[in-house]
Image (tube, rainbow, N blue to C red):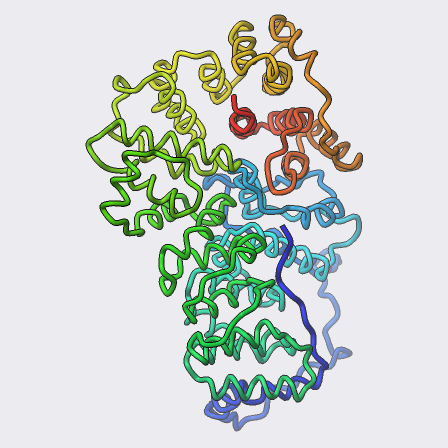
Length: 577
């Protein structure tokens, strides 16, 4: 997903624009007591006493401390789900610096979880080839926080930035601080950050952030003056931002032709003007902006649904929040009745909210089951079954297993397995009674699956001859990557050998080799980072079985067995097993 944030820099003399913003600081300083005694004179370097001697004649040697590298200060210790403090042991900083920017939002809960733990773990920074460089550490910290922002870890990102020493906070980090506050719909906090930090920086971004805050507060005279000063200072034009300010000042009478840079700040302006987020903007917006818009009460719930669905699929919006958004839609009784009589596949986000309403409540178990089945099929069709399983799982409450047919039992089992709820899935797996569902439950369980060859074979051929080869090939890779002895899969091997070659692109050789080397040497951080990049493809979990097997095997090699099983289960569910 492209990063929509735009960097614009003004000439140094643009700092005069900030005089008004800094007057408060000057006034506050003037109000402080005036020191009437002179400052102590610092000692002359030449007068510093020489090293003192001990009785034996040995001198006390004083050496400067090495600079502290704060680039991997984190929120998660091992006890809170983070990786060990030494996770970067053996890693080269150059590898981390080169690959970290490649982390992108992905509709894979497991890859998103791995990335979150990697980015938020409290760890010793990866070593550099030479002497520790404070500037290099600062750059790595900024890049790391940029990825936390880009992947949509809204509250975690805000908490991490607030925990940092002010001495390591740079312009990009402060921008992320402000944008993340807007993404939580904390407009007051965001604007407080703008006014307290604007004097540090001279870029046009800060000027426009202040103008936005003035417009959000209804002070359009100051906002207009700020825009005029920007124009006088020959700042690079930003017609999209100007249109948003005009839209807000004219109470929605103006038009915004497009929103190509839908950051949280800009989306907040759009929401304040009570205008919907264009569909094309939803497709390109950062997850943090989508999450902010989905949770913005200034916008009717109907208009937030599409943004909420995409934010949830990318891991930026908790599943209960999307469920609550579905529940906030009001439907007429006749709409609900028509849907009960004719359970059609949903075509829009509102259709899904309607089905969700039917799935959540009512005494007619058959209607609820039909609604859940329609939602599950739609999620599978859109390629978001696994992330949306957490939204669907609560709808299974109070539906008795005994009253369900085998087909619905299989759907319910898959929903619960996708959320990691293997205990509640167990009776549904038994009720489904098919080999594919049983195979999924074995893949989900920790340890080597020890799958009976006939189970794997029957699961592969269940979808018919056309799909038997590809399914067998994927099952073979997943099971062997989880430690299954290939010799035990004799019944599966013939079908697996007929699997056609897939056209998926391989990662570059350096990344492939680094993941193998890191996994062989139990280097956790490097293995996880490389495995995420190998397994991700255009914002989704790759369907290429060789890449999946490589990533799963790497995770197992560094002791992340549960993550390896979760990734294998995702791959199997995505393939329709």
